[in-house]
Amino acid sequence: QVQLVESGGGLVQPGGSLRLSCATSRIIFSIYVMGWYRQAPGKQRELVAIITSGSTTNYADSVKGRFTISRDATKNTVHLQMDSLKPEDTAVYYCIARQVGTGLGSAYWGQGTQVTVSS
Image (tube, rainbow, N blue to C red):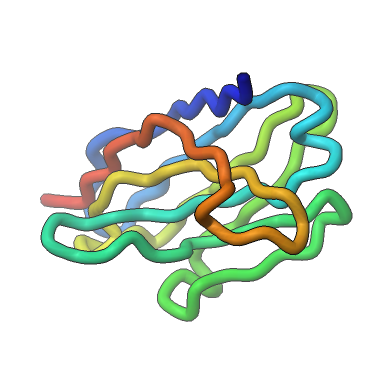
């Protein structure tokens, strides 16, 4: 059973920062592509950022320059540093892990963590 344990969501004012974390097992962390998707009310789930085992990254255009995804091999954890947050970043954020070459249908998902950006 693959577990993705998320933490770090919450309420923040516009312009503020949050860091999300997703911890998993060493084998998953070592070989899977990991990342974050988000889903806002009434909208489809969308990619935020992903990172490969070789630390290649990909970001949604809407978060480029504001969000940074990284890997901590000492803790088998992927982090999403979110800066300059905007109200439109409000969503439930889901950690994802998938094998290279596979699609979302066979991916593993975390339970989701709420991020709310509001004054």
